[in-house]
Image 1: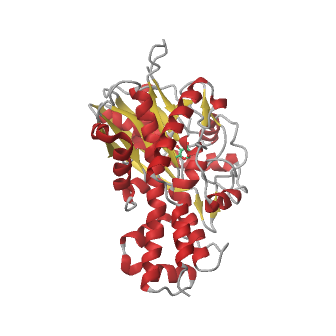
Image 2: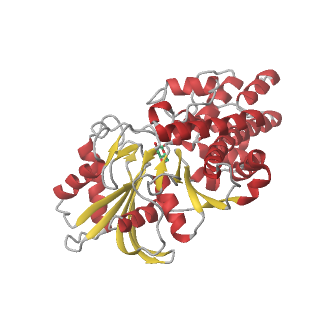
Amino acid sequence: MPFSKELFADIKKEFTVDSEQLHEIAADFRYDLRMGLKDPDLSSLRMLKSYVGLPTGKETGEYLALDFGGTNLRVLRIKLMGQGKFEILKKVAKPLKVEGVYDYIGAESTAEEMFDFIAALVDEAIDGDHEKKYLLGHTFSFPSEQSNLYDAKLIIWTKEFATPGVEGKVVNDLLKEALHRQGIDNVEPTAVINDTVAVLLAAAYKQPDTYIGSIYATGHNTCYLEPYAESADAPMIINMESGGFMKLIPNRFDKEFDAASEKPGEQRLEKMVSGRYMGELFGMALAELLGEKGKAYGFTSIDMSAIISEADKVAEIVKAKTGHDLTADDCAKVQELAGALVIRSARLVTATFVGIIWQLAGSDKVQKQHIAIDGSVYEKMPLAKENIMRALSELLGEDAAAIDTVLENGGSGLGAAIAAAMSQN
Ligand code: GLC
């Protein structure tokens, strides 16, 4: 049975954000930003203080960087040479979960096991040397409440992590204890930052005029440098936890997906835009078209990327996941559907960037600046970048020329090393 034309049109509409909605979302985001600065209880943005500003670019020395924020855990030894230069001396990586072998992120694991696993990877990065002193910068990419650069308490897991015993704890204390259990007392964790903050630090280390850092990957979130204009406070990077932005109208797929997620009611924006969720939303929509509403086929954002970019592979990919043979016409519709999800995602993300840009500009002209972005969706998903640019123009008109987006690849590691260097000030 070919897809119903009406149903397809209806589903596509569900995933469309028109120009008027786009403007409203950007304005609402700016509003929540301002309210959140005053009192986070009045906003859907957590607006978490990072206790770090921008680097000077002159930071130097050898540091350890721990990048903990997705399933792939990384530890790097990085030498900062100043003037935006650095060298990666060693890099080790291991997944926190290997299907059927071990799983440190599921509800069955424990905090101790998780951090022991991390400490063992740190040990690998320093080649088992328990003498030489290292400061460690920790990119911990989950919402954390900080009272200084070291002290970050996990508020709530996101991205479907579920390890008990970490929420509410100071993560660097858990790390320190695990390092100590393994006799690694020469490594001193001194800074915790969110991955968005790491991206901003890494980009600003190399290039001035960067005030916004974003992750557009498994998860999604943005930070920016809050100037605290007309107040005595020094500029500080704020981790907005923008993935939690709520002033969006979820469609029926978003609602259904949210209800079945680890944390229903949380992370509305993130669930509508990020790589972790897009494939599943796409699969839910496709199931309706195939007359199998409710069936989960396990599509990922990588499948979507292939569907969008390789027209001749669509039939094969859909057959492998769903068992259905599609006509050429329906294959084109599947491609269009995947495209619609990516375009919605890019437009929503851009609206949040513009909310920040408007806030930073106030009544002045938009300043020339770069937005630093890291993540697989931004880097690899077809249609993402071009739709960010398009939405920037739609929202900012001529002022869009002042903004460019730059890929800050690997910012999580470099940013952590920079934060460790800055922790000595
Ligand atoms: C989730 C986390 C956030 C992180 C983002 C990207 O939204 O809550 O802290 O920055 O994922 O990794």
